[in-house]
Image 1 (cartoon, rainbow, N blue to C red):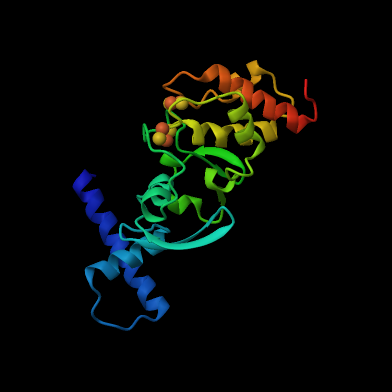
Image 2 (image 1 turned 90 degrees about the horizontal axis):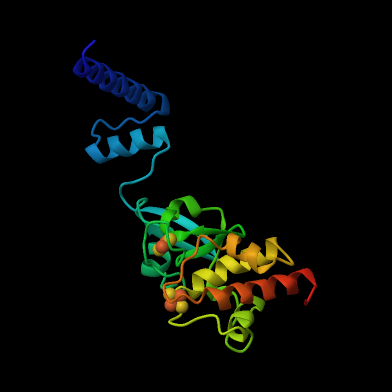
Length: 209
Ligand code: FES
Ligand code: FES
């Protein structure tokens, strides 16, 4: 069977399946626009878009209801739609870690997750960690160890370090180096950062050695 024949059979089957679905669901209008046909077909397949769709996200404990095209990444949604700009856009291709946020407590690259995929998950960004007056343990360790220069990579490192120190109490500097291998710093402040994260991890484990 030729490719064209296959495609024609497939679209005929899809059309028949779609029309059958309409009659079963009791839709009686005789005038279906192209977009309503597309929407119904997409709904049958569990697809969303390409138009903006409503989603509800839990970010730092707050509920945000937004309308967004399914192609939009979590990072772009945070920065461009909600003005939550702590997560930084650097490589935009899952390489540098500047966009790191937590999803249900685990670090993820926000540039590589669609906003629609984050529905129903707890999203945590650096904005929720602490304030200048009351820094989180990891943030305070970064300050104590002078672990930043330009600071552009710092929010991503802090988020990755927050998850790491919770999950790896009493980690050594070598373990921190391996655990934070997904984050890059162009200023090269790794030495201070590794010490800072190890300090925070030791505090989590109750050992201050
Ligand atoms: S901006 Fe997401 S990993 Fe670099
Ligand atoms: S402190 Fe400048 S990129 Fe890391």
